[in-house]
Amino acid sequence: MIEVENLSVRWLGAEAIRDASLSIAAGERLGVVGESGSGKTLLALTLMGMAPEGMDVSGTIRVDGHDMAAAGDAAWRRLRARRVAMIFQEPMAALNPLRTVGDTVAEPMRLHDGASRAQARRRVLDLFEETGIPDPERRLSQYPHELSGGQRQRVLIALALACDPGLLIADEPTTALDAHVALRITELLVRLARDRNMALMFISHDLAAVSRTTERLLVMYCGDIVERGPTARVLRDPSHPYTQGLTAARPALAAAGGRRRLATIRGSVPALGDMGKGCRFAGRCAQELAVCGETRPTSADTGPGASAACHLLTQRATT
Image (tube, rainbow, N blue to C red; front, top):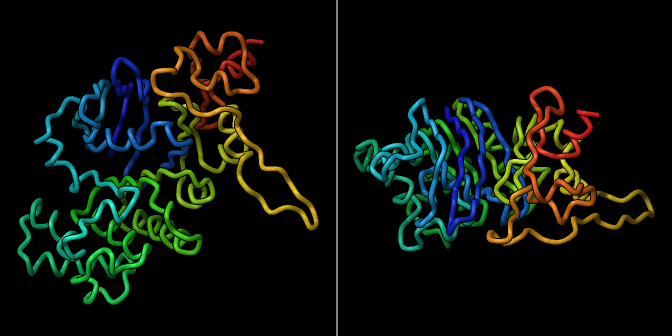
């Protein structure tokens, strides 16, 4: 469905994404995790041909075998919605408050598929039913502020599915939802991906949501993919110190009568202009070596279909 090789995104001479490579096959569910500032949303926007103005994109982005990295706006407009679609983070910001949600979801059908108003209306009703929006006939004429947070998120999902894309990118789709609604949204995304044989790229801070939703996982830090592999394996037995820090920081129910201090990763994500040439986690890593700040680590195999980029791993492999 989509293949990315050595993708870099530069802004003012600094690499916001550095030599990222990944692939997603039809029907596959890929998770992307990392702290705020790790480059997750920028990666998603770049795969949509929507990298912010002024950023320089290099490398290869193949969608259905066609290289889109250097494609112009017209080529990307033909591709968006039809082959690659995105659910944006905040429904109230992504939905037009002056348009009914029915008109919003119908627009790409009319624009890309040439559907008539009546055809689009029928398809929107079908999508509202498929995504579990209650009383879909009435919702067509409602505005975003008249819906609950979960309903608005389902409208965004219906909007992304309007032209039956091959890849759906879900950028933090459960962030503003309570736990019960978030669970139902992740279940919905998994069902849609399976029923439609649609590739899903699920971006989240919520490791529990990622474990429920995805089969493979990428861990990003400061624009680098530092670890990848089967989701269950990476979360159960992480190899990179950064992934270890993320998993250790997950809240857990304490034993009866007991308390546990929540683990943290020291420091914070550096600003784009302050990222070094070596491992970008250097300075925050409790296992840092002398070489880490000077030389970028290469990936080392950590198991079937899994790898991590860390000098500790390559050092162990040579001793």
